[in-house]
Image: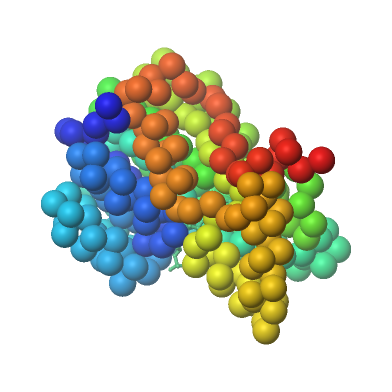
Length: 254
Ligand code: NAP
């Protein structure tokens, strides 16, 4: 089950955290994986791990906000069966404290970046004969979380784009789903704590861990396994869905 031999996968944000683990898991299952990331070093590190484990991987060093460059890079790939849009950034602020340039940055990376990736990959997936797309949204698209105005906006848009793509390309045998993780321990969380709670990182880490009723943050591998399922032929009846993977955050935090 869940084998991906003869399949090619493209994963944005594949150099770190959730995306990195997704790349490693998809490659282990037999997919050839294109690791898309801003950082050459991070992308190459993921490819090195894939190759050490006997898999096939290639780096694409690119900023997902750059449509022209992303189109050129994806167009050099002959077939795309799997697309996972993971690249993303965080931000803290409410509607009044969020500065225009921060709002635009969140929009550019988390919304336009996903649009660019879909825009570039879907025509290739159509030619490939279909495939599976997974977009990484967040619990903040479902529930009000304090000070996540711009970030929540971006993740709500990811969910809406997922529904649109699932509807428009169902005839092309393309399935599109999203995943809404709770807090997952990755460099994203560590960087966020360092930037926003300097000197109080350990205390805040503990506090954020406990906001999941299960009592801890998720692990990137737990998200990667759900991505694997949604990308596999075993999930062939699933499209237009969003999956919570959040230790009970959305449904049990009453
Ligand atoms: P991460 O460890 O920071 O990984 C994100 C990756 O995306 C990094 O390698 C980063 O590169 C890359 N990236 C950022 N901007 C990019 C751009 N413009 N072009 C290309 N690559 C870019 O974060 P993560 O925690 O794994 O998060 C992955 C996704 O899950 C994000 O969309 C995030 O919003 C979502 N998510 C995370 C959590 C969580 O608690 N961790 C919860 C819910 C949803 P650099 O490191 O070089 O900047």
